[in-house]
Length: 334
Image (cartoon, rainbow, N blue to C red):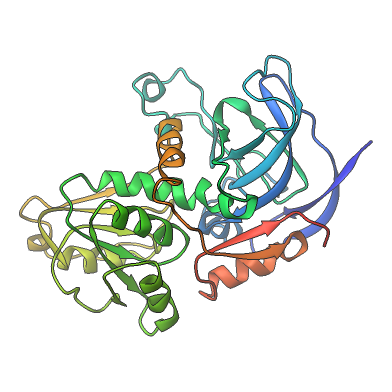
């Protein structure tokens, strides 16, 4: 029996553990991938911290997977052996619920999430439903491509939810998603204002290197009011801060899967047709549009890499705000 190395999550507060597991086999409609790189996401932190409390256990985390097809299951015909593909958070849908039928598969009643309901990419091999895998732009290396598969995709969906008539865009929480979407927004001619946690001058300098027009902390007012705001930090009070900084008719988009409670605020901050909305998951159409767009910008991902056995350290650094850009696990010899 062929085995592989994997980092497994067994329970909240317990550290990830490096183990040997059997290499999975591709089932019907699936592909078996040799994993080359896997991005690290705040959603992984929410799982480890018990804030998303229904994971498969034990679990291999990781849902920004770049790998090569090494086996195809029965009926799987989209990809050939040797092709490079990406695997996102949304791993499968039922295809039959009302949301799937009306083109909102991101809201499917019975979804499968990579690295949550099924094992993900913190391992040398993984299986995935071929229908929900993406071909990747050839201009990007494995490490560069990994953050595109969640930070990029969810960021892109949040960005599009902000609407088309946006001249000034605020981004709260300048990490993996923000540094990608800021580049897209600048490419499309928008002014971008970046907000970080107070005192985080390193993140502000990083934002300015990505081409934003202004960077400050979340307690500051931007140089001008915002037509829309994207919130990537899982901090509920930022919703109120963003509302205070917006124009009439603006949209505040919450881009995370989990957020601390939003405090009460006076109605006049919401009045004049301001909107607060969340973003849930992604659709395959989002992925196709975004992955076609990124080479045109071109988006450049800023990445810190960790070997597989240091996946827990990557999560710790992400939790403590010690990273700029994205973290990626590399599946080379370590």
